[in-house]
Amino acid sequence: RYYGCMGLTAASETGIIDGHDKDETIQVWQRGNEKFPGLKLVNVDTSTREGIARAKKLGLAKSGLADIVFAPLPYFALTMFDPNHQARFFALFRHPIERAVSMFYYRQVASWERDPNVYKPDLAKVDIEDWLKNRGGKADVSNFLMSSLLGKRYFSEKDLEKAKEILRSKVLVGLLSKMEESVQRFDTYFGWYENNEKRSKCQESAIQKGVNRNPHESVEEGSEAWELLADLNYYDLQLYEYILELYEEQGRELFGEGVEQKVEESTTITSE
Image (cartoon, rainbow, N blue to C red; front, side):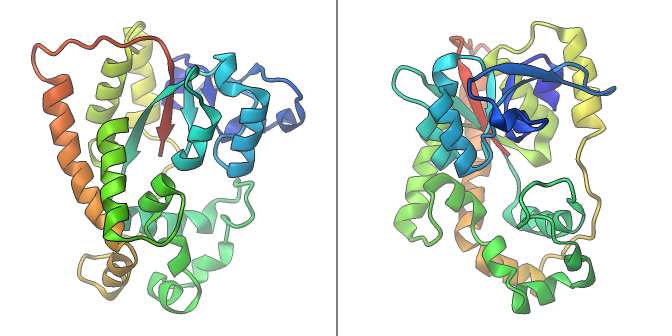
């Protein structure tokens, strides 16, 4: 919502609502509400493998219509691009266990989700520990980051090193725990500072106040649920430690004093 508020044209899961999944040609349409008027959307859904295939077929990358592409499945999203129509990747990362816990509670209330496998109101009656042990929750929260980057579910130490190299060479990383600082890095790198007054208002409404937040109980470190999640996210936890290091490294190398940013105009792609 922040970048939509900033006036950027986005490709995301929202692009196909109101019947736009039936469109036969690629186009931009506007949707808005009182808080975020005039959101500009490309009529594709880049959040699923099926949507990515449709976006590729319609020529999303070649069209140049999207300033930013939201893609939670980067391994598959890259198939939309080619050597003549490329993108730069940036992403906000969250601690894997915090993300897994948040997802458990999100699924209890997410009645707006189109995917029937996401919204599970019956989980409101289930303890997270019981869900992990007895109700099939393990598959939903196991090494999400690694799966997103590599497009598979079972990993080795070699896969971990491959994921690190992808992040190091391809991704401008941000941290959810340092949201405002991370967004400032993104805006600096991509040159999204043209309208400072608008940017300030968008920060206040979409970042500082937050959208799509779902307050919930936390899982204490050291608890049985925490340890279960740690075992399930063995590779993700190691990868996240590397992301923390990479965040500091990029801060020094890309955003240190006296460092100039020379960024060509292009589509950008992000994962949440």
